Image (cartoon, chains in turn purple, green):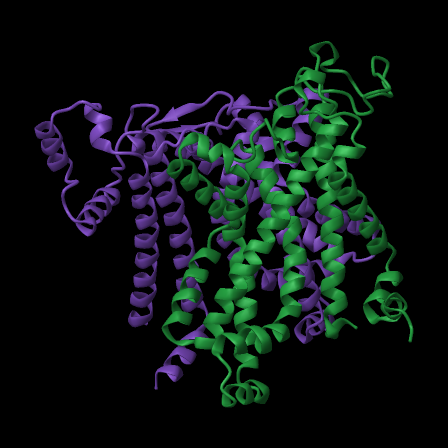
Length: 327
Length: 304
């Protein structure tokens, strides 16, 4: 058990170090920081002094180690465009992205399960056919087009919902939330649908196929033979057994949702980390790019790690296999 | 001796093609899109990049069937007076070229790395597959964005503008090679222990010759299927990057760039500037995807 956890942690740290190396090497491409600070006609003595102060005369691996040590403390230096610490910029934007991502994930989960159960129980109804066809189209459409379409229909033609920004926000300590104001909630609807649509179709198809599988098993037949109501069989017995893979997939997809928020945030001008990253790429703002990269990688690594460890805790077969392989 | 065409017509693949009306329709649509894109310089109503022919008088014209539309501009004109139908045809050229080139690049890279990993095994295999595992745990679009961002930082501005199409091909290609490498590695591991490969080794053929002439032909089937399915994904990735403003610039727009530019006019009522390129993109990707799905099922012996 301990060995497995340690090995898995070791892998996670290695991935983070590799991503950190990529982020660090970004800095090597952006010209000479000494020239940047002193201008072209500085004296050689001044140059040497700054070079030494910045630690640029040290070997590569020492510079990298220093970068990692600072990154672990959340210090990525100043943004080149807005002269402000990168960590502050990201922390300002983090609540917007997380609120959007979690809303999208919840919406995908609830709507996906409801639609999946319905399409599994009523396989031949026209509504099921419509839902399945809709999910096929939803998968083929690029995210940004879905967003534009929703804006066109609900913001431009009907004028019901706002098409950009977060609405009014309330500050709770360092966390600015849009969940407590009416305009904040209204602003959240269209971006959440855009961001969650792909995962919703994924969950819908997963729940449908799992339900169809489970409904064929013997214990469902027994439950029916015992005279339980359809409701108890479908929701008490069948649905419960489909939920483990569904929750796993949703958990694993959370990282993808946070990453794909880049596109949704650009379409809706949502002031989150993704929009910040795209602006950083456009303006070659390396510190912001590096920090965002490390943060997203950290999300992915932590999510994968937690899911792996949960599997290990839940599924005893994994432990036996490992043990047998070792001997 | 029957002609090659007649033999192809009786082949299993052609039979399953004829039996599926959706696939025939998708093939026709794909052909139409490709023809419109390739023949754009001859078919398009006007050349949208000929600055001399543009006039701001004819900017923001709605489609021809509305009251203010003009017959000369079937789908209307954009903010600079460019004919929307023509910009779509020229844009589809760039979208298709970047998508196809990116898939070919990903395929070449994936096949070479997969062959090497499977054939030589050992630490080379471990290294390539570890990198693949790590890359697979991130979404492809994020990898493409990152590589694109690195290129933007590493290359001087002018050089980057001149090479933007190549940068896009490399960024999208590098984000997709893992699928190919894993498949080829799997087939190579199976093939390399078969007798014909051992025989080739015994008669002293060079390892590279064995890999290319003996193993590769037997691993290519699934690779071509993956390639077909990935064309649609590559076109969408290109469109997404261009939409985000980090792809093809507006001076030589792809479909994604056109949608981005048109998006600014959505609120002032000029919906056609962004909606028609969007429809073109969806039709193109949907037809290519349907063709890919058909090919995957038709070549899968389990589904016959």
